Amino acid sequence: MRPPILRRLLRRVASATACGLLAVLGAHPAPAVAAPTAAAAAGLQQVTGFGSNPGNLQMFAYTPDGVPAGAPLVVALHGCTQSANAYYTNSGWTKYADLWGFDVVFPQTTSANNALSCFGWFDPADSTRGRGEAASVVQMVEYAKQTYGSDGRRVFVTGLSAGGGMTADLLAAYPDVFAGGSVASGLPAQCATSQAAASGCQTGPQKLTPAQWGDKVRGSHPGWTGPWPRVAIWQGTSDYTVYPANATALRDQWTDVWGIGQTPSRTESLPGNTTRSVYDDASGQPAVETFSVSGMGHGLPVSPGSGAEQCGSTAAYFLDTICSAYHTGVFWGLDRTAPGGGTGLPAPAGLKVTGVTASSASLTWSAVTGAASYTVYRDGAKVATTASTSFTDTGLTAGTAYRYSVTAADPSGTAGAGSSAVTATTTGGAAPATCFTATNYAHVTAGRAHVSGGHAYANGSNQDMGLYNVFITHTLRESPAGHFVIADSGCQTGSS
Image (cartoon, rainbow, N blue to C red):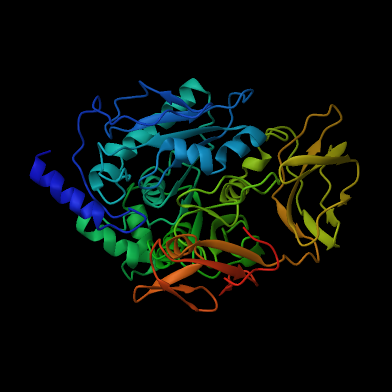
């Protein structure tokens, strides 16, 4: 690349938004010329020789001890300015790889491909079937199938920001490879097909009908008639880098591909001020799910902690709200991977919650012919085995959502497939107010405030916090969830 071009690229990088998702393109060098990367964390291993690698990507993998052949595979794509190691460290996927038993591949692009290390979701040379980075990712999948014995029927892809845009493109171009996907703060498949159109997609994708959005998917692999991937969509309502309109377009796109309407089959409140909307297919199974995180800015939702539904760690663009890896994994059925292995007796049908208290949840399900016992799983972990078709789980925390599934076992003890999961939320347990002390820039990045006219304003109260920069610091008190007020004089109900 000639120096004048490099100088223009650097000027554009300097003016890019905080996310760095803007499409700053660089030509692909030969695959042998790759930018150096930071040392991988323990447990994350770089893989070489996975294929011809037309997109000049690097492959990293996390393979937990004891995962058998035939396990699922998750492909996780980082955002701009990030790395495979950052996604491995902060996203939370490794926790559930250990718990539920699956392998994770972390593709990595570098500044050798793009000045901001963005995946080329906007470039047909990288985002279409058989070409560039998309083809390199699929070669990594094939390597994992041959080397780790990954189940080709249960390959899933997830990504943040530019990685989310590439995720949507991969799902559209390779529905024969990916059984499901999860797009976090990302873009619809083939929203942009040029550098010039990329930033327009971020701030407001084209106003297309669901059928027109669906046509972009159908046109990515002409002749494919299904099955289509099941798609989760994560979006913060205060994301001013990739606007929430993209989540609406993604929903329209994938519900149209599935041939279902844009009215949700049901909605549910989750932790982190999150609303889940479920769109069922013709058989009544979730095909598309949207997760709208009120007040969250641009990033991947995580929830640090040791709880069954907590995961990840906070860092740039990893925001403390809710563990998206857990809920995405449940949507894909990864929590039912280890129990039963999907063979033997059929999954129990009709699992439902019949009652809750502040410390208990009661369940019933339909009997399975030939079953000698049933095993109940809470958040992917075994909690009880019973000969009955009902169970009451006790000792729970008030005001908490728990996810349950059930397997049936024959007289020899061989377990069958896991049921569809249900959620039981215990009563009571109102969360206390929480305070956050940070710069105005950090508050906006974390989704606690927004920018207007160069000033930062607290979400909910809309109080003026002063200039949007890293020099002014405020304490914001959150109560109720998503509503922030300035509390510089002191916060009496906890701090963070």
